[in-house]
Amino acid sequence: MMSAFAETPVVESGLDYVRTIPRNLVHKRRIDNVFVTSMQRLSALEFACGAYVPQANLYLNELRFHPNDVLLPLIEIGRQAGIACCHSYLNVAQGQHFVLGTMGVDTEPSLYELDWSECDYVDVHICVSDVRYNPDGSFKSGTAESTFYVDGRQIYRQFSHSAVLTKKRYRALRRGARQHTSNVAAIGAVPLANALEISTRPRLARSVLGERRWLGIDGRIAANLAIDLNNLFFFDHPNDHAPGMLLLEGMRQLAMEVAGGLPGVTAPYPKIQHLDLSFTHFAELDRPVGIVAETVVADDQAAVGTQRLQLKATQGDRTCAEASFVVA
Image (cartoon, rainbow, N blue to C red; front, side, top):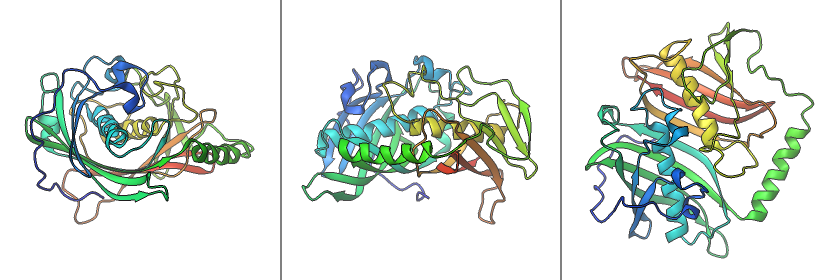
């Protein structure tokens, strides 16, 4: 879990928001999927980025429960900023693969108070730690902690730990993952056994969850991930597995549903205060991915008025990702 909000220096002026940085720095093919606009190196492992929160991206707009639902774009900005700084300042060559291991998110109340149709530019302060290098001196892995500001006001923090793999290592890793999945005799499309199956009407124009929900007798709720290769936000370019951002969004949507009360999310909308996420295996594109959510009994330290949720994304007998949410 991330630490409480610390006093982090506000990013100095000098960042601009006139145009986006080159697409290859953030591993994107489409210009409208690039959100970082400028970068600075403040010290050896400290950086600053300017970015805009997209308001006219068709795919992202159709993933919002309400106009101020900007958590997914902010997470993507943090992801892009980290990759761009690695390429620009830490000598990570193009063609390398970034594999996300863990992520944490903390939000401030101000995140949900802003009018994002007006305040759509953010400054990001990034500190990299726990850096490991390969024998040849190239970057192997590290932890990035990013703090987001709007007009000098701290609104959000994001933590992530990622490894950088050469093409050869990545291909070997993927071969092993695909071999395991192909050996599974049958992977069913029902993510929760002995559960009541119901049909729902999606609240989002481009939901990443299927229309069916499974309600377990133990209180768990499940859905299947809808892998839409035509969604050009998640599948901006050809991918050989379900992107981690897609799994994250599937868990976020189900968490919002559970916190808001099935069958749908309505005002007042739940607010995600904290998120911890870990990825353990790749999710393949040709097998169903189930997502299961359960409410956790809060401990004595939990804030009044919040819900704690545990979510898991699975494919066959493999857990692909696990997440915990604190939602108000």
